[in-house]
Image 1 (cartoon, rainbow, N blue to C red):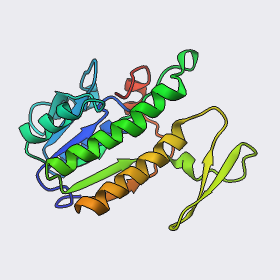
Image 2: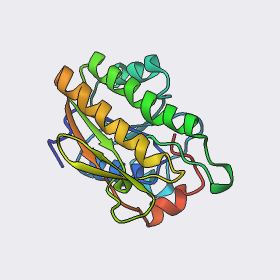
Image 3: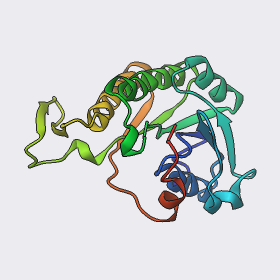
Image 4: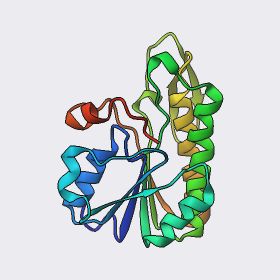
Length: 201
């Protein structure tokens, strides 16, 4: 991974399930990582050894374009891993409107800030649920690049993530930003256990 993410790197969604894995991998490769959070934040215990050296935290709401741009400029950011999502316990699921605002508008703001801040690379953390095949509750969406299967039902997560993929690639093509899409499956282990009750905003 060394040399892929040159300069300081933002990892958005500092308390998500995936962020600590990403942060650790980048820090171990010698990168300087800035983890962003919207509301409350704590460095997971398993990452406490790198806090203050390779790891810093910055408040940043992806719904506010000026905040994203400020973090990019204040920290000399050249690459972003966009892992922000909106997660609630099942008893209090976000509305489709709330979820899609974060996934879609948040990604638009992030990519706009990346273009204005001369960020060279964005890695968009999507969802493995986009390629669920064989479920009776799914719809098919064809694109020029691939045939995409998105699990539907009442879960807005994969649909919002696919929108984020398209937005990221559109901005990348328009502004010369290298964009990579990652569709991870389920995560597990100590990072997830520490963050399972915390939103990934």
